[in-house]
Image (cartoon, rainbow, N blue to C red; front, side, top):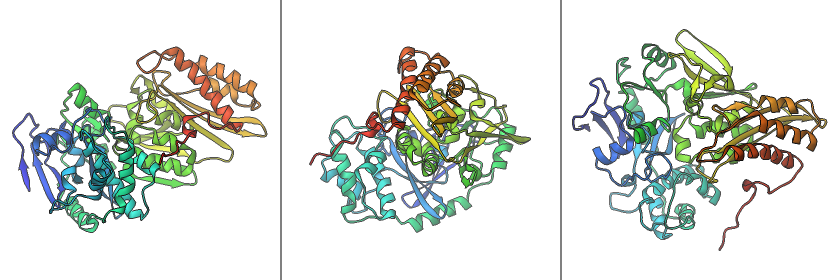
Length: 498
């Protein structure tokens, strides 16, 4: 089915947008490059079940599910439609809350469980919760295991409700698999996605919205159009659209570049493509270093992590981006590429100032290299924010020490929220390296850490608070190394009432 939307100020070379929905291919013309998926659904297609709450990826009322073929299987991801550019989902399958019920009106288990558990009150947030539950349902059905409360909490971390409290919604998540099963036609969906991919037109260098499929094609486009806006998951650029009403003359989207969507693992560590989602990148890091699971789960909500990319988070360069302090502490390097070659540099050397970096206009961040864990490595990452879940850091500190025979033989520390850029705490590292691992050493290092940065005061925290917290987090690291437990909210678990 082809639809031509009402005329608007759309560049004449904007390509058609093709998605798989309700078993058929929908081809849409006249979709502006800065149009969001939410606007497309509500204003152009009249699908108003998906709600707009915050317009910035925080509340989850706009959650939809995207499907792609990955390694021969259908991969579903719940994402925020309010900040996802419509053209970025070209070639994907899309489900909204209108698509779940059967033709006879029978509700999907994700919907029926919400009804049976009385998990909806005003109903505004309900479509978003249902879509996150739908993605969780499909994931757990493949694994053949019931949903645990912890899994439900993580899957729903990007969905907010102001009415019911979360217990009935979490109960719905744990109840839905007990209902009569409903499964997607995975084989049929994969076949149609493959047909859609084969019918995709070739590259058009002068297109207003480009979705290159290969790294070579991406680098050619970047060289030809250094002024174009690069996008990946759009979790930041989407805010420019919804909050600043920006428009883009030309967009280059990295998310379908095959080479940049891969994670390679060898004895030296990980090589993570810039277009790998935050969810998948953190999963790879957690596989090597399980202690990072709690930290990774606090990086925004799951729909943001499902859409945003590790390369985008790094290239964005926000001083309060959570991935950079961790990667700095891990000794990560970034690979920058252009048509004329490539170069590799430590991640902390990428930045020159607030949201500024060393990349040339025709250069882009392609890969992140993360060294493998070494024997004796003791890594902890801490995030301080006003809300425990789904919030932006006031301070982030990652401490990676190697202690042998009671002496610190190696120190690597990354900090966020305390300078104009994510930073390495080089002076504090020097205060620790070669010193005995004692309280006296830690106290001297705490003073060095507080003196090393001059953080600003803003809506999240004062300068004095940030400086105090920096030292306190290093002290927490020391106390945990001595076996002290339950000094961190992550150490507490609330028992569920009957």
